Image (cartoon, rainbow, N blue to C red; front, side):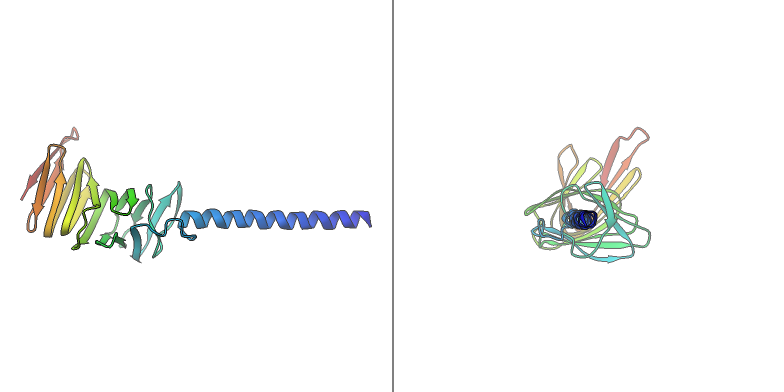
Length: 198
């Protein structure tokens, strides 16, 4: 009898421990993916994803889904023939083209800063977007009610403005790139960057 009672108690303890472990796992994943609303007020939220896009948060990588609130420190990567769209602080949308990598540096109301490491983005910031900044190389771009695209490849970058104006801090001062103009950046073999506006 005593042996059966001990066995029964041991089984109950094991079931409770397994339930606690599973619950902790769900909480950890849910916290990373934003299931519990801790970052539901994020001004940058993923939209439609075509093909395969991945994100990394707190050194954990998983597939990017729709309606995921972004956080500072997130890394996003689109694969071949893929696109991912984001809603940015009510100011417009940001679309990542295929084979694009960006990192989110700052993500709070009125202050979204991301860095494009490689690839192409299309930004429709037709509404006031003073709090949105996009960095590439040593350049920092701030759109002002603008529609533009940015292509960052190894050793070069091209920013095309289609509507409005994008203010770019080149490190040597700020330059306004108006609609119909382009900023072309190239790097020499020593990594020194030069730019030209066309």
